[in-house]
Amino acid sequence: MHQAVRLRKQARDLFRLTNIPAAIAAIVVALFGIFADRQDKQLFEERQRAEVSNQVSLIRTKLEGDINGNIQLVRGLVSVISTEPHMTQARFRRARVWPP
Image (tube, rainbow, N blue to C red):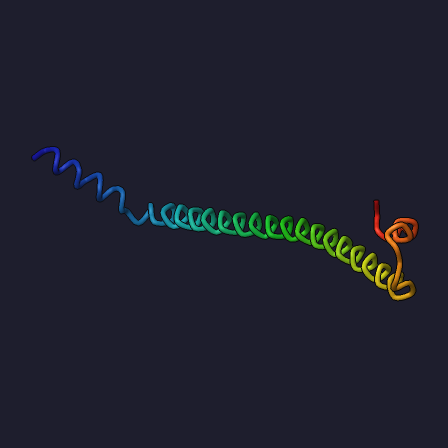
C-alpha cells in the first residue's frame, strides 16, 4: 500500500502546472523534428528525381542523335539509288553510302 501512495505522489508531481511549459516545449521540439525529417526526405526525393531526369535526358539526346544519323544515311541511300536505279553491287561499294 505504501508503494501505491508513493506512485500517486510521483504522478501528481509529474503533472504539476510548473511542468506544463517543459511538456509543451518537448512537444514543439518533437513536432519540429518530424517536420524537418519530412522536409529532408522530400528534398532528397526531389534531388533524386532531378538526377534521374538529367540522366534520361542525356540518353534521349544520344538516341535522337543516333536515329537522326541513321535517317540521314537512309536519305543519302535513297538519293543515290534514285539517281542510279540500276546501280551494280560494285558501284554501290565504291559510292560508300553506307559505312563499311
